Length: 128
Image 1 (cartoon, rainbow, N blue to C red):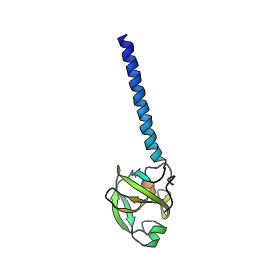
Image 2 (tube, rainbow, N blue to C red):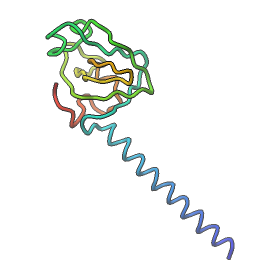
Image 3 (cartoon, rainbow, N blue to C red):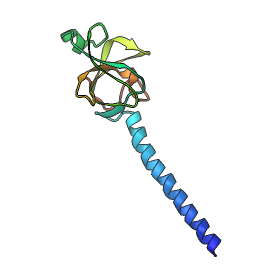
Image 4 (cartoon, rainbow, N blue to C red):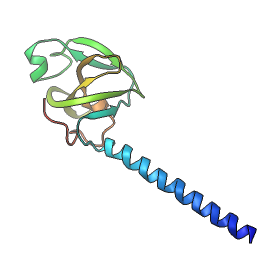
């Protein structure tokens, strides 16, 4: 009798843990596939957040068109993504750049390549 109660309790506990994992997994994977503005993780180190360069930076973001490095971000940092724009430069085969807000309060363009997202274009994030 005691063994069957323990077995049942263990089964309930493992089901609860598995269910919690599914809930948490869904939340993180929803972010990873892109569902609009919000926080996205940065997977690399020393990623430049750029601005400056006037209208060319805002219309065609790239390292050359946005010469001022506002700050750098590194994994496991998260940035708030407001919008995305096809840039004048592809990074890692990804032509998009995202306008972000960092935890230090800096705003600027960052190559979308460095965000934790399954595709180049982040679904649900508007064009800048």
